[in-house]
Length: 68
Length: 429
Image (cartoon, rainbow over all chains, first blue to last red; front, side):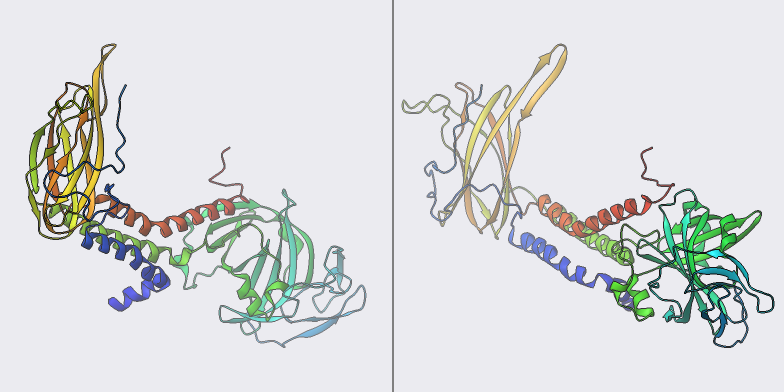
């Protein structure tokens, strides 16, 4: 049965190998907790950005939002 | 085309009754009609009576044909000799012209044909009830591609029937690429022929020719298989299996989502210090929560906004290392009734995903800014290991990319194929 499956898939063997790239990417994203298209983090320096407790307001990327 | 089966001499010769040139012919017992390769006179000679001359094919090429008359080649494991060539055109569409190479198998006395149109080749043979490949040629599986009567442009070589009588035939071609079914009707009598696509490289290899010696291709052949058609079933099967596995993994990821690390409702309070601009809220700090492994973190925000807006910068802060993650959400929700109909705009909800947040103890800082005097409530939920559906859709899209491209190529291949047909299913009128 397995031999038949391999024979059937032989014409697309290269594609099967190629598929390992996106599947590997998915597995990496799942295992590391990474959103592949980028996340919402706006902090440019993650380490030591703001101390524990109260912390100061970041000056990075916060445009004031005014509405009508 | 016809079938005969007797043992016979390999070849014989006769003299052209018009120019006297010596003509070599190979179906010694079957051939009766000849076109002189030198003067192109078409005549009948049975071997016993005086030759009957019908006229000349002045358009016949003087430079020969490819494959040439007399050439021997092996196709589909059978050895054939090219004994005749006929150039025909459609009676009603003279621009459609093709060549038919008569192939004679000396071992069995059977004939087959290689038809060439615009550089595309089809191997055709008489249908036989004993053929082993009958399952491939069920008429119901085929589509009508063309109906026509033909006229002879020119011919060369020998034939076992009067090629001019074919003008009375009503030909219907049915296709199921790479296969072809041809019905030839003369009155109430009907004969069937089968055919299949042959790549030019196969023709060239069979007759020992260079690929450049054959006519160059244009357009799509009547039964030319589409790009990747031989591997299409395997490609889609593999894609289906991979997508199913991917979906299964994604469902497991959705199912394993447990309780939120933080589920808290906070209320915006106005910052009454003199230096704060109007609308600025006090900094709000959430209770602490623990992340026991590196993962993505999703923060869901649900507000009580009603016809107002809220700008909400948020910091996720690691209490042990000081590492910070930040995002800002601009949330607005408006609703009302206009002309008796209710309307709404915007949303009360927002969410954010932070990737690769290390294990540790965290809390959230909120820096709200809203309209002066407004103090909306914000329900905050923090989730570890969110299923990240965008990851699934991105990878599923990549997996589907090649099959979709192949399907697109197949589609355009089919459209081009049917451009030469009166039965074009893609025609708009």
